[in-house]
Amino acid sequence: MSQSFDDISAQLKGRHRRTKRLKFMSMGALALAATFLVVFIGDMIMRGYPAFQQAELHVPVTYSEQSQEIPLAAVEEDVRDLVSRGWLRQLPRDMAADASLMGQTIERWVIADDQVDQYLKGHKSHLKPRQTAVLDRMVENGTAELKFNVNFFTTGDSKLPEYAGIWSAAMGTILTLLVTLAFAFPVGVLTAVYLEEFAPDNRFTQAIEVNINNLAAVPSILFGLLGLAIFINFFGMPRSSPLVGGLTLGLMTLPVIIITTRSALRSVPDTIRQAAFGVGCSRWQVVRDHVLPLSLPGILTGSIIGLAQAMGETAPLIIVGMVAFIPDAPTAITQAATVLPAQIFTWAGEPEQAYVERTAAGILVLLSVLIFLNAAAVMLRKKFERRW
Image (tube, rainbow, N blue to C red; front, side, top):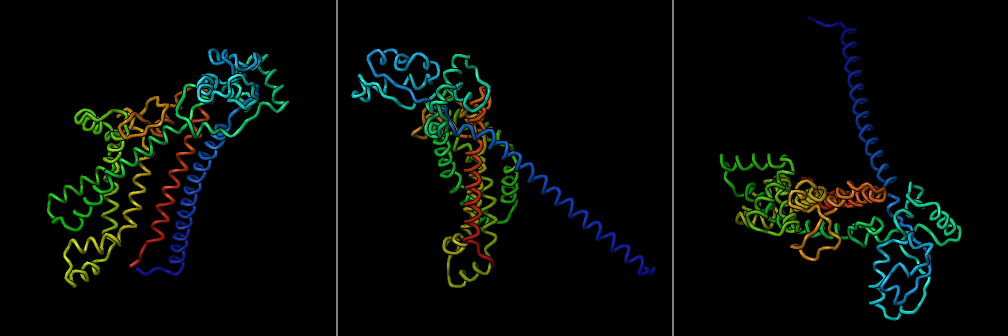
């Protein structure tokens, strides 16, 4: 049955309306996602920015035998409870390291207690009226200020909020990721090369491929249970160490590296392989000299993204004991360590406002590193990508 011109026009108008509706819905979804992202990052910046500042007091410090035995005697009585206990505990070690300090009184900036820090930042504090009066006078005189918090980047975890930092967690993260990279990258790439270039197409290899694809969707906490059973209970490796954490994350990252590597190998045209075979190359020479170099940008991009994903994982590391109080940075992969996500998880459970700030600041540092890694992967792909 033939349609009139008016019927066809009405159908076309309906299609255009549906197209516009779909376009606006897609734009709305994108705007909603962008709004969530902006709100999340904005909230983290507002909460975390105060952690990058720390209150310090400019007070006279007396270095004497009495101060060495009783550090509280090193500062005047009215500011004793305003100075950090951590700084006072460190005083005898400073005097032992530098004997020339003995007998001197030096005016210097010292770390303030976390309650002083919160008061100067305009947050709720538990200071007494006498302490706030002294502190207000010091602020007017310019002897109490907020300065850049160097300790946040140079110290490890601490029970004193003003001394809690990310250094030990950052070192633990670096060692863990090095172990992950050393284990997952060669194993993942070689597995992908075998499956893509050498393995026969039969049911056995098809079953392996299906299981590798399924492993990429397995919850990460199951890899933690696997790491606990194999590396700690069976092989007896040290618990809470970057060695165990790195190998566990390596198991979790392997499917990602294998899948991305296979995709990169498939992107190399068969004509290149055929040309290499045509001049007498063996299959190994074809893979080594032609296929792998051409697919390397895709392999590196997938590996970097896999490592970035592993860096943000917490659940498998909780299972292998990497959520612990670790004040000192590890120097070997067999020492007890923690990682940035686990450190953030620990601080998130503390009630003090100073730890809330450090939790948000730690998230900002972690996000910055993840964005940097993903940007590096994109730049690497853009720079070395070849279109066939």
